[in-house]
Amino acid sequence: MEEDGRKVQNIEEGKAYLMLEEKTVLEQPEKKDAIQPPKAVSKTPSVVEGSQGEPPKGVSKVEPSGELLVTLMSITPQAEQVIEMACRTCYLSFHRYNPPASTEELIKKILKKGHHSVLEHAHATFRIKGGSRVFTHELIRHRLISPSQESQRYVQYGKTRPFDYVVPPSVASTPFAERYKELASETQAFYEEMVKGGVPKEDARYILPNATTSEIVISANFREFRHLFSVRCTPFAHWEIRKVCIEMLKIMKKEAPISFWDFVVNEENNTVTILPPEGAVVDPEDKTRRERAERPEEPKG
Image (cartoon, rainbow, N blue to C red; front, side, top):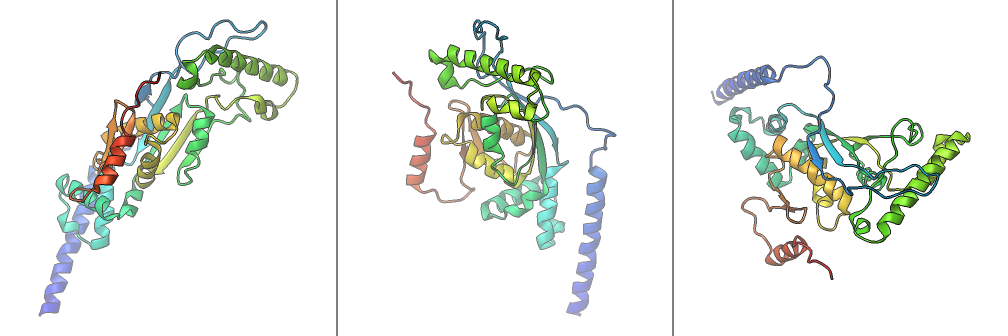
């Protein structure tokens, strides 16, 4: 009799599962015929604003990069429900599916337990414009990110698009700023001269600086984004990639608030704090080190 009882229970759970799957499909947003042109979601102020002064004689004036644009191109529909459904498959606990309460409870539980593989079922794609090739070279070191980057082999600066570049804040506030901009203009002029003289773009590009901006599109799953933010939003990360990652994080916190609930953006010093899991015991020494690292830098001089 017990065996018959289990069979009945399994059948009932199976019906609930099928009903849930049907409901999820029906609740999916209506598909569009084509992807609409990306719309900027997040903008950050320009790295350097204003004129760069008069360029050397015979050299065309080139402006620094205007602003950094971080655009969310796409994200998994109902991403956090997808994560919950994937996780419940591990335990066949679909009878507990009761969003949004069950979604928050389960995702926070898997984050606490380190069961992060289920986060890989949700993905997001970003377009980033206005960042330097210094930044993009750091970004593509994350091997689980899928990048598609503007090619200096095929893009001709001054023809396909204007040449622009990034001026680091540490340079912009010094007497070196004007000379920095002059050399960037000279480099662009020499690049154009070589291309007009028959040098292939793929060889003329060797003279271009790391400061040259480069458009890039990246896709990754939620687990990889969490890893990216955990290492690139800290005070120890380079300022440019930290700036970009914080902009992406702000967007992800709006789109998937539960999956990134423990990342807290500190607007005062442009860093991120990762909160310990709910109910976890925090080492006082570790907390002190973290607070010291996240403290705003004192003015120099």
